[in-house]
Image (tube, rainbow, N blue to C red):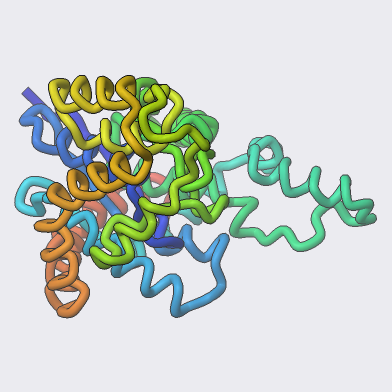
Length: 336
């Protein structure tokens, strides 16, 4: 029985945080261990250029993201783990797909429409002021990422489902003109996936600057948890665990019995300092071994490069053969 092709991309524009780990990294690694799946994981470093023009930040983030996935247990003998920029076939396919994509389809992309609306709201005469072609054509590069390996399932957040529909539209147009070539990829949105709150009680996000970095030093990690905003209830006063960020963090790393015990301590009036201390110790026990591996990788980037090179070689074998077929279909081939 053929394995189902699952593809996951991670944009390299920030430092991985607890929300990334709980909501995406851990579930994706667990899913990759299923025998029924053939998994592709890639660092979307070309996508990073859409939002970030700081070369040092793009480079540093790519290393941090790669080290994080490896430290968290990604088994590169089971999956294909590569850097987007190491697969030139993807960018070539992106151009071929660009030639099959209607501008009107790109006009409807949420990110582009939002940028235009911002300009209009600011009273700009030019609705496209400051909008780069990278932002405008982002969905085409994403389609190339997916279609290059004929992915069937693509785990995404709700904000990315439109791009999956666009990838399907582009694939369908190509198939109609040149014959059946691409699978129709399906978005996999984990409705039950946990979304952690950050330091201020809002969704943990780089945009809100309220994240807790996954592999900060132990001292900084403890300090971050102590900074989580709580209410003014005194020790001994019952507290509602279901509205508490500290309890939510603890629960994300605890089993049912541990959660039940902590819930009771909230109802019994645990002090906020004690709740944060227990949460820090519990999370740190889980993350410390991974932090050690992460630090080893960050101090020896050649180890990361070796893993990515291994994945790129594997990915290019497949991508090269497939791109040759695509080139031939569109008429890009030798004369003899």
